[in-house]
Picture 1 (spheres, rainbow, N blue to C red):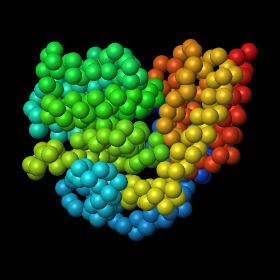
Picture 2: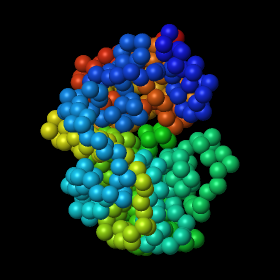
Picture 3: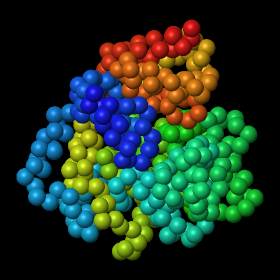
Length: 401
């Protein structure tokens, strides 16, 4: 009953947001989440890709335990120095291309996007920016301007000047040169921002030609390419960053979720270089968050979780494609590493399958119009993958009938 009571109280006092099902989290172990009633759920969405190494990892627990006696675990981290922030910034520079060597630590993905576009505006002036169809970049007003996901996210909110080009998933798409054509038709923008794999928009995978064209065009006209790595970054796709699959180097990237804090990682060219141009009292969260973010990167390295993401991700995709051949309601399987989208023939499946799965002990989330995301922690084993996929297939069998 405790779970139901908490949900009831939340509905009474809290503004309704995006709750998918009545899960009230108490704890977690490996790839499993425990609710307040003691029931375990196999997590196939990693708290929307925010928990890449699962739950209760002993090295993370040790980090948190280290701070028990620290009386200043949360400070105004953009106004006063702390070792944890500097160490995390240094590590982020290590795992990105050499041109990306300046870091602003912030709180959330949306704030990372806000500051990334501020970097661009500071350098290029208040020109329009460009994003893509089905993009999701966050819910603060600047980030929301460049979001093109669901109407409910933007209704009645003001926007800054911008243009949206088509997000191309095929190299032969007739709009593959949309950015160049926009510039020839209208103006040179302040920046272009894109996800190589769209998260909220449906786990759509950009074509290599599309991303390379954005890079080529932004270089040609001298404005920055911003890659949003908030959901796809830190090993989710089997590489540290999704853009690495495309053979390009952006000017600015944004990170959050798996990092535990938000971050803008930029080339020196777009560093505002003026004290006060950017800041935030709680920027970078607390020192515990910063230390956990750093330890997360270290764990991904020494447990070889990039390799595991590729290996188990390929295995999951193989099983899902076999299901696609058996069940006509599945129309597409796509993704990289452990960022996999399963698209269905009708929108209703995206909504009802996660609810049925929840009752069977499997946590799923929808995205886009007709897609369910498969994004378990990077530590997942083949046996755990099979367990979740067996539940998933059993649900689809039932829907087929």
